[in-house]
Length: 208
Length: 303
Image 1 (cartoon, helix red, strand yellow):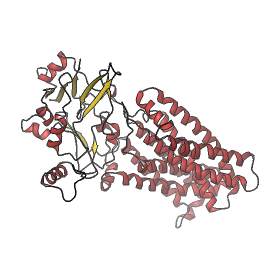
Image 2 (tube, rainbow over the protein chains, first blue to last red; image 1 turned 90 degrees about the vertical axis):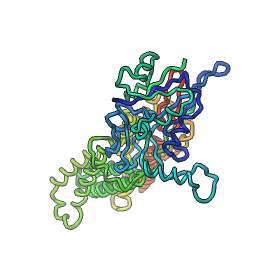
Image 3 (cartoon, chains in turn yellow, brown; image 1 turned 45 degrees about the vertical axis):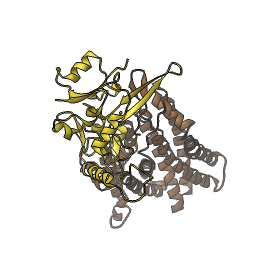
Image 4 (tube, chains in turn blue, purple; image 1 turned 180 degrees about the vertical axis):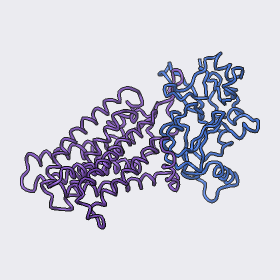
C-alpha cells in the first residue's frame, strides 16, 4: 500500500479549486497553502506558453525532510505518508531547507484572513484557528498529509474531490491495476525533479 | 521566472554559525599556543577562555531561532539522524572539553596547571572537536541538496578558514584587553595574514563553483550584484578581508613602534565583523532549485 496522486496537466486549467478546498479542509492560516498552484511560463511573445502546476506534499518514498529531521518528529507511515509529530518537533526549519518541493510550512502564529479587519475574529475564523491549533499549532514545521483522516473515512483528499477538471487521481501506487498505476504507465507519468532521488508519490501527466 | 532566496534562516542562525566558528578558531589558537609554551602561555589562556563561551552564546542564538525553543533538548535524543543531531553532539563534547581545559587555570584546579601532559592531551582532543564544530556547520547547510549554493564541498572549507581567521582575530582582541602581549599580538597578526589570503582564495573558488546550475548562478548574482551585494562587498570583502589584510600587511612591513599592534587590533575587530557578514551572505544567498515539468520551470512559493 502506497498512496499516490496523479495530476493530469492536460486537464488542469488553473482554477485554484484544489488550493481553496485544501485551505477549507485544513484551516491553514493566511499565506499558508498545503496544495499550492504554481504558474509557469516559457518562451517570449508571440510564442509564449503558460502552464499551471498544482503542487502538494509529494510524500516521497525517500523523503529529504525525514533524512534531515534531528528529533525524529518526521515519520513515515506504512502507506508512505510523511507526518510531523508536533510533540517532538523543535522548529529548527531544517526540513524547509531540505525539501526540494517547498512543501514544509512553519507558522509562527495565526494570521487573519482579513488583515484590514479590526476587532475580534469572527465565528468562522475562530473555528479555523481552533482547528489549526488542535491539529498543527505554531512553531513546528507542518505539511500536507494527503488528508489522512478523510482517507481513513473512505473519502478522497479534499483537493482531489474538489477538482472540477478531474485532473487529480488518488489511489494505491503499489497496486498495478489501480487507476493511478495504469495512468502513470499509459500516459508516461513523471515525477518532479527526480535528480534529488526522493521518489515522490505524486506523478504528473505531461501537458502536451 | 524569478527565483527567490530562502527567508527562514537569517541573522539568528548566522550569529550561531559565526560564534561557533569564532569559538572553535579561538580555542584551536589557544591549544596551539599552549603547545608552543613560553611566551605564548598568556595567549594560550586567552584562546581557551574564549573558546567554549563563544560557542555557548552562539547556541543561545540558535535556540532563539527555534519555533519551539522549549523542545531544544530533543536535538540530543536522536544522534546520527541528521547533521543537526550530529553537530549537537560535536559541539557539546567540544564545550565540555573546553570547560575542562579552562578549568586548569581556575581555583580549585589551578594547582594542576603544571600538569602539562594532561592539559595538552585535553587540548588535542578539544582541538579535534573544535575542528568538527567549525566544519560541520558547512556540511549541515550542504545537506540541504535543493540549495545548490550550500550543497558544495567548498562551504565546509570556507567556514573552517573563516573560523580559524576570526578565531585568531578574537584572540588578538582578547590579548589587547588583557595587556602585556604586544609581541604576541604582532606575531598573531602575521599568522592571520596567511589565513586571510587563504580565505580570499576560498571565497573566490566558492563563488566560481556556482556556475553549474541555474539556482546557484542566481545565488551568485544575488550576492555579487543584486540585493545581497552591499553586504558582500562592504561587509565580507571590505570589512572582512581587504581592510584587515591591508592593516596587517602595513603592521608587518611598514609601521613602527606601537603601530603594528594597533593595526592588528583594528584589523581584527573589522575582520571579526566580516565573519558574521560572511555567514549571513551565505544564508541570504541560498536559493532552492526550481521545479521542472516539461519545458516549464516553477519557482517555489514557500521559501
